[in-house]
Length: 98
Image (cartoon, rainbow, N blue to C red; front, top):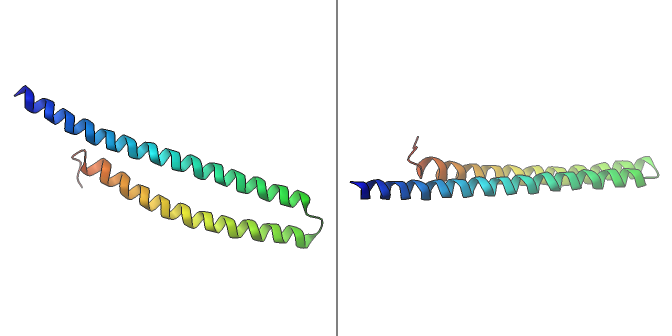
């Protein structure tokens, strides 16, 4: 009887470990996205500071908007991917099927 409990604990710990690793990866991805967003904003700020005319400022905003939209699309794709992995590793591996 104790052997079965030990095996059960091991499988739960493995599932918990996979779940924890998925959470850690999600956290790292989120921090990378936040850092990239800050850098993008700082880049816009610098370009606006250096702008000498309205067309220069408009060009800076257009470039920023194009970059921002690309980042938003990428973030959406990463969100869907990590959410899928989160649900599959967390719910099914821990025996919490829906």
